[in-house]
Length: 439
Ligand code: DLL
Image 1 (spheres, rainbow, N blue to C red):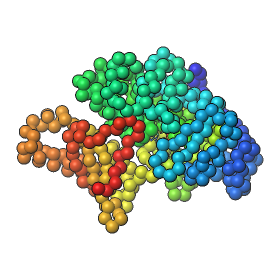
Image 2: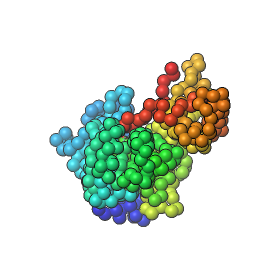
Image 3: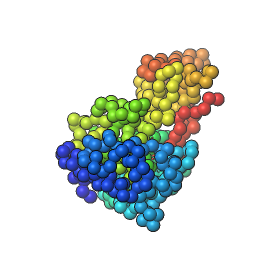
Image 4: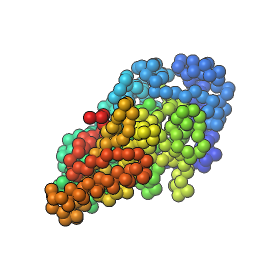
């Protein structure tokens, strides 16, 4: 495969993006009833779009637009030109449907192959693909991308953790992909069999589909003995492979901006924020055929940056703080679960398997109940008899120290309840929901 586009000089990249955007607008003007109307309402035509800098003149597309045009209203090719259909994994409302032509499926494989390459994978390696196969884009997306790179794939899908671990031990794959919360479950299964990271064949883990932080990365890397990197994407844009971390750089993910042009907009005014500031990620698909989207409002909160040590020239995005939908407002303070997760990393002994339950009074969230686990070994190292007064005192103090750390770093009041390691429900495959309803 040729990866040279990832190293284009910035001005060459901007010319490529400009050329692609101009072509796209011409294409939509001809083929998309939906965008014809949007252009008319905004009073713009293809003559107004001459370079990528003109992108801010274009209308924003929201998930509701896809829902209003369910199922195929945003497609720009007839049904007989499609090769595949996927849906988003949302659990509320109508699913959002996405269609792919053969060229789109090839593009999907290309960006996933590039992502796997950045993650450390190489032709000839074997992928243990524990993303769900089905209408979710994770399973098939990683599958075809890995084949394109020249890897072999075990299409195991999610769930049945003991069998997953048996097959990893027997087949010795070098690469695994799944959600980070499921990678923790797999790591727990290895640990329960007394198998440490250096005894496991895996070298690289390609993890995404939900927010995760450095504390989770640390746990996964140590326990599975590998490099874990973050893959981001969403069905509406293509699926996984919109952005990807490099295994030697980590910290943030390159956006494959030759195909997916990113902007960060203010969540309220919907105007661009100064470069480097946080806001909602909005993406334009520059090269898709069956369902191109202009300035699609992902609802994911992040910021863009250039890394001075980067190998590639493309812009990077910080890990997603959360979906705007998952934001909790606790006594007026905006909080994402990932911020609580980050606070855990500053208290020794916390195992980041946790759940948050809003405590409401008069329809207002006044605090969060935080259920989280404590490391077994850390408890043993205290040499306190279980059920003794000293033990209760230790747990009580530990709970207060987690509460204080969250208060200090996030600014909200919590009621922390510590559980023994492995006591809370684990991810059984797929995405985990960390926010529970009030009991
Ligand atoms: O989750 C695609 C995917 C599959 C990405 C496998 C990575 C790996 P959807 O089901 O449409 O697609 O959900 C998209 O998931 O808008 C984010 O809120 C969240 N998300 C995806 N990747 C990440 C990530 C797939 N790396 C939605 N970090 C997105 C944080 C992520 N959130």
